[in-house]
Image 1 (tube, rainbow, N blue to C red):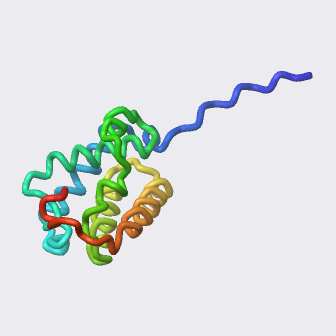
Image 2: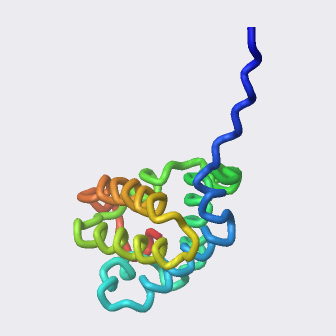
Image 3: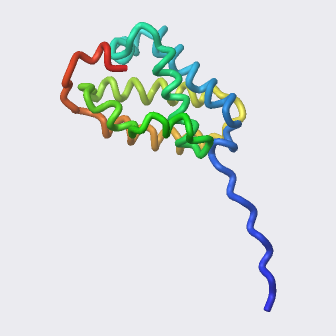
Length: 143
């Protein structure tokens, strides 16, 4: 009988991209693009004037989703889909979200291109799953 060598722990995507500083940089770049680019005006219009709370929420979500610390996201006691339930998200807006996120991820040096592509592909699936939900209240104050 031989003893098998212990298997190394898998590297989590959170660690592979560079952890908290890179997640924060992705989120900052995403909201900077959304706030400044005229092409993202419909997406920006769905958000409150102050982007800080929603930016913190996205940072908490991405951190947990990538395998980092989960406490801040779990404290919200809601899934990302339910947080967007009341929004009437059009295909155009979902596409803008995906495009801005793809640009934000691509703008981070050192992220493996295959991992970046996989991240954006999965986030795109999530964004497109939110299309067509009826608005239960005006979208401008939802996020």
